[in-house]
Image (cartoon, rainbow over all chains, first blue to last red):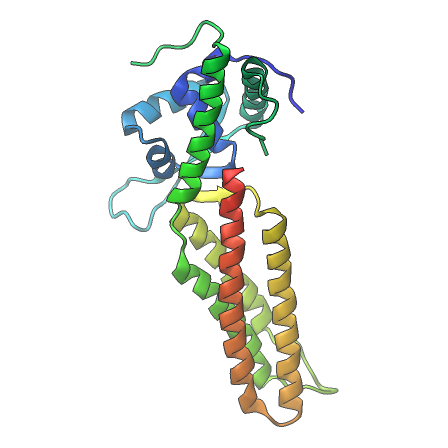
Length: 106
Length: 155
């Protein structure tokens, strides 16, 4: 169990939502994450870049048969450091909210 | 433009953030398209494997059909295609999904054994029935396992 630790970088609303969704999966395609959060490509890219620079997410490219051009699928993963930081931040939020377990990180 | 928070949220703000995370998880699970064709493809792989019993030679000279390895490869390719189609690599399927997956394997082994028995009694034609059963049951069970994985996303 992670120690409660508030993280300013993750707490920015879109970044918190990104980490919250990624925490539930092993990997996720960029387009699925964008549609789930209902944000623009540019907004998602900007926040993913910030999270990637902090070492919280990693991005990998894969070829796509459905695309005739050179574009590729982008798979996004919450790294081990990202999971640990997010879990700690979540516990901090739960402590602040006074709610012991509204969200159980897997 | 979104600014980074540099102060701790109030209890109401923290609770709202947690509710937002729960809503996102639900939206994620609700937004996933169930790949019915690919789940049926898994049923097809199972049916093909069970049908392999029809060309086997049960008895002392029995040799394990190589179609088992090909079916395994076909199943792995189908799992990869499901990942590509949904855009999600699941972390797990939960207890129910795990039990159903184990059930699929046991079911296929039972149907294959029944098929071998039918062949040994000269009822080679009856393997069509076990093969069709494998298709229907594995497609159905694969759907349950997939939905169990979606339920895991909501938790």
